[in-house]
Image (cartoon, rainbow, N blue to C red; front, side):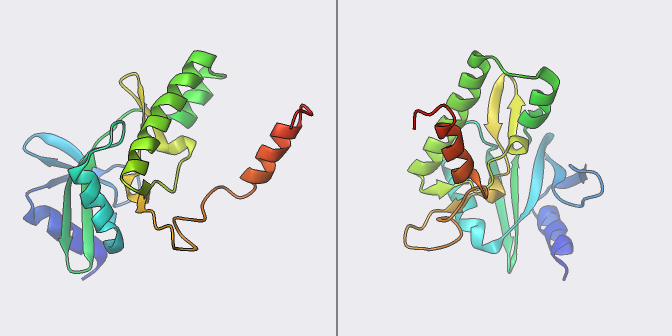
Length: 180
């Protein structure tokens, strides 16, 4: 059976009613409803089920809450709260340069989220402006399926991360005023 068909079967078995795609022209993520609550269903990697279950048991403030993890064979679907806000990328485009107070809020809230993930030995792996959502006067780190268990002994995946060129760009920035 195809992954999407398996995922739809898992959702139906668990009592979730599909409402439609979250993103136009994509079958998943999918808006679903159960007991009048609208959530987001995402197909998950089977090797990431343990992390999703850990986040379900230990919710992280300012991240979507994992409401359910459905698994059957090699198919996994996560159900998470819908954070229906504005991405940080869109907010920056709309508002222009942030004030120092706004920057401090983004940094404080995001770093608090990352600190909590670190206590769970989890890394996010895809922190970018489009994965930070402004909702009800706070900033949320979304795309929970990008989270992985951190393994110190591994030489790839969750250990070697980052955006290509960041270290060099940071070094140039630190050196631009001649102080570093």
